[in-house]
Each structure stands twice: as structure tokens, then as C-alpha cells.
Image (cartoon, rainbow, N blue to C red; front, top):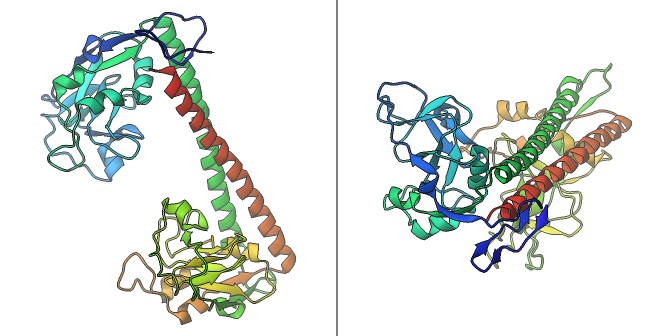
Length: 412
């Protein structure tokens, strides 16, 4: 591919281009290569109500919302067939001016009349789909859109003005095909990487469950022993009384103990009001009673940063007092082996999103231990899986960056 100037007088060229193509791209109206769809589902040709997800495209409402939000009678909905397009005026994160998607997953479906639907009258469908995925058309929607008066996330985009928007595209069918095929290869590579990532995550969950639920027996033959949390930990009593430490830490179920600014892109602790915060040091454990999908009884993570941090007094901070491999304990608390005790003895308290955790309940949480040698083996094995997962995740994110960069430069 060759890099070209984005403009030459009034002629326009993409920044990134296959070298055999030289002619400038043309500015055309959307109506020049599309036709609006207004056909209704009046004969109930389909009983499948669809919605458009900015991330996943056309999806079955029941699968997406876990219920149908359409009315029982969808005969007045638009009837869309495979290969046709629709514009969703609802904005979301990363899609400030809505999204345009092509129906691919289903042969047909019914779509609310809040959407603007159309079909192509010419040009390669895969190429046009890729163009709309590039978000280069946003600048045109920006010029005509305003936030809807009903304040439910819809943009006020008049249909006639939508079809009057201008777009720079190539009308060379060979170039269209090459761009579509190239982006399709990138998408397939991303899908394979995503599948690899999901497989490693699944494998990691399976290994953790196998170790801590299947093998954690407390009989003489297994040589695993049982202790209470209070037998091996004591609570942290250090306070940020002089307000000296500014490194506010949050406890995330997914990312562990990380600086608050990295997690929220800002500090949410009140300035000057951290004197009651706990001070944590490298190796300390922190329990967060807030429930989440990945930690239904709250995450308990080990602090692995070298700089001291401060953490909300809503959390419980613990210092290890026994000769136990701390990495093993960190993995144990990522398992669900201790959940049953909380389920049997804890309560949800006033807030349904938090575990009501008394000191007695906390210090009675069971910890099951193998011998020191096995602790090290388990920790090393799980650390190795985590390292592999991290590398695959980084490669996946890099591929997404490559795709985004190509989409930005392949289109005008």
C-alpha cells in the first residue's frame, strides 16, 4: 500500500491506498447509491424483532435484552432483508452520532420505524459496510444532528437530510473489492485472536476450579490443611493521618489493586479527606465487599505495586502473618472455594450490591492449604497461564489498533 496526500486542490485521495489505484475519490450523496426502505411487515413475514447494537450489529431483541421490547404486533415495523442497512440514531460510548449496520446474521427481521433503513443501488456491499464501520461519515451526521427532544438517547436526524449527506468513496469496483477483502482479513485475524483469548480465559477458570475445588481436600491422604483467615492474617491499622500519601488505590474485580486515576481516569476520593484512609504496602491483601459479575462475593486482591498507597476505609486491609506463599493465597482468593462459607453465614445487608461483612465473619473465612512445595507449584503454574493470557490480550488490543488505524487512513 502507498501513502498519499489526502488532497490535491479539489481532488481527494485516501492517505493509505493500494499502489495500482491513482484516480481521485468522488464526493457523492448517500441518495446517489442507496434507496430508502419503507416496506412494512404487514403480512407478518417475520416474527423476529431486531435491534441494532453499535458493537454487535443486528441482534435478536430477546438475546440482547433478555426480553422483547417490541410490541406484540410488529406488523407496522419495517421488514428488513439480509444485506440491507439501517441507521440507529441512538448514541452510545464510541458512537456519538449513532451507527449504521448491515443485516447479516438473519435472513430477515422486523425493525422499529425509529430506524432509517436503506438498500444499495450500486457499489460493493462489503466495501460500503466497511466504510460505515470506519466512522468517517460522522462528520456529515454531526452537521445535521441535534440531541432529541425526548431525552432518551436519540439524535434528531431528519430522514431527508440523512440521505442528502455527502460521502467520499471510490467508484472503482476493483479498489472497493480490495479494500473490503483487506479489512475482512484483518477482521478474521482479530476474531481468531479473540477466540484464543476466550479459550485461555476459560482454561484458566477451569484450572483454578480444578485445583481449589476438586483437589482441596482436608483429609490425611490429600495432605491439605484447613485454617481460618484470622489464623494467618491481621487487619491493617495504618492510617493516612497526616495526608502525606496521595496514591489512592481502588480494588477492581477484573484489574486488581490499581491507582484510582488509572481505573476511573480521575481521582474520586475527596481532596483533603483521605486522613482516615488505610495505608497499604507491597504484599498486603485488600477485600472489597462490593459484588460484581466476576466476584459475586467481592474481590480479595494482593497489592503488588512498590509505592505505598491509600485505600478507602470501606475496604478491609490485611497483612499476612504466616509462612504461606502469598502468590498461592492471591490465586486462592480468585477462586470460588471460599464462597460457600459467605453464602451460608453472610447476609446482603441494607445494600444489595455489598456483602454484609462483620470482622468475625471475615476472619472465619476458610483457607485451604497444601504443603509449601505444592503452594509454589500452583502459584507458578497459574502465574504462567496469567502471563500467557496477558500476552494474548496485548496482541488482541494491538490488532484492534491496527484495524482502527487502517480504517482512519483507507477512507476520507
